Image (cartoon, rainbow, N blue to C red; front, side):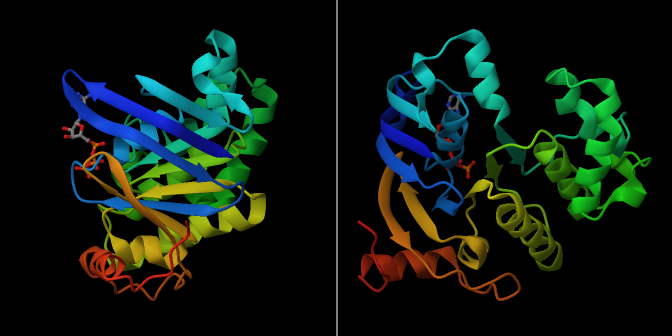
Amino acid sequence: MITLHNVSKRFGSFEAIESVSLSIKSGEIYGIIGASGAGKSTLLRLMNFIEKPDAGDVIIGDETLNHMRGKRIRQVRQSVAMIFQGYNLVGNKTVYDNVAVPLELAKVPKHDHEERVLESLRFVGLETLKDQYPGQLSGGQKQRVAIARAIVNQPTVLLCDEPTSSLDPNTTAEVLEVLQRINRAFGVTIVIVSHEMDVIKSVCERVTVMAGGRVYDTVEIEPTGVGKMEQSAEGFVERLKSGGEHHDT
Ligand SMILES: Nc1ncnc2c1ncn2[C@@H]1O[C@H](COP(=O)(O)OP(=O)(O)OP(=O)(O)O)[C@@H](O)[C@H]1O
């Protein structure tokens, strides 16, 4: 579904991503963890071409993004939605209008907007808040609006950059539960970047550990389920180093 092949990315003379290769299967929930500055967000932004690689290939489905031009890149990027730690909602638009933004950008006919926006809001359990403004919502509600906006154009991939890092444990579980339902209901491939191992372990089937712009390892894990989140990233990485986790090579 998403393949990175020897991808590198520099910012000036600093090599943020060094020859990274990984392959994410269609329909899986995939985690990327690592310390601050390890290159996790850059890696995610390479997956929808917000950042362009200096070397290597980014392949979505069977199409190599860096061989595509203009309109086709925009089409493929529409199938890859993204949510962020800071939600990125438009403060002076209502919940409804925020969710409608991708439909406007994709030039979906106006008469289809209402049904699709309300369907997305219903899916995240926020239909009744459609006329509120972001400033009136809790953090968890804001992230669920961002998720509704991300799925309104029926993406095949959802990239999540620290989606729960600003949230308390209960709200974190709510947001992860919504992501898991999206994955199960629509088969959307989900990639979650987080520095919180308990978040990754609760829903992800495979996890790549990043360190210093490189892949340290990729391991298969048995998701513990939302609500049973207690393990620290440090403990996980230590066990990995001592050979205590099942490796997927
Ligand atoms: N646009 C940019 N210009 C210059 N340096 C950048 C840019 N984006 C990222 N970097 C640098 O690349 C490195 C990796 O950044 P990235 O945000 O991908 O790390 P991260 O693992 O997501 O860390 P964090 O969890 O702190 O966000 C960092 O050293 C960062 O300062």
